[in-house]
Figure 1 (spheres, one colour):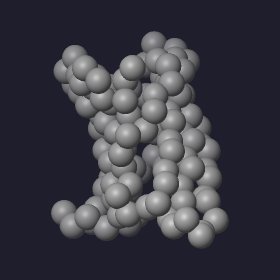
Figure 2 (cartoon, one colour):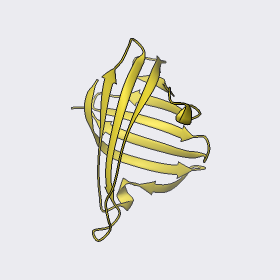
Figure 3 (cartoon, rainbow, N blue to C red):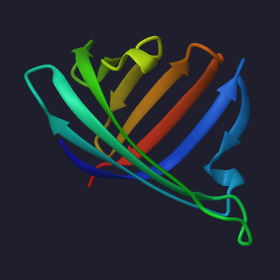
Length: 119
């Protein structure tokens, strides 16, 4: 639980990278995790992204409620409780200094990976 600074993101389809933080001029993201009950957590994502210096910045905030299923002490599955996103498959890996979420967006076949710094 807490607030974490985003350090990288990427999108890939069929194993081929299609977009990442390296393809933009500027990006900033944060993740705030709040415990709701023993296995339920709210994840508040905030993203600020600018493709090039002369382009308009895009911003998005979203709060998803996940049921967390631990597989090991450092890995698990996130089950999105919102009907709109409940077909997405998400897994996480918790290391000493990073928290990574990998999600398969079922409707498009795109895999989104987000990594946050644990400080």
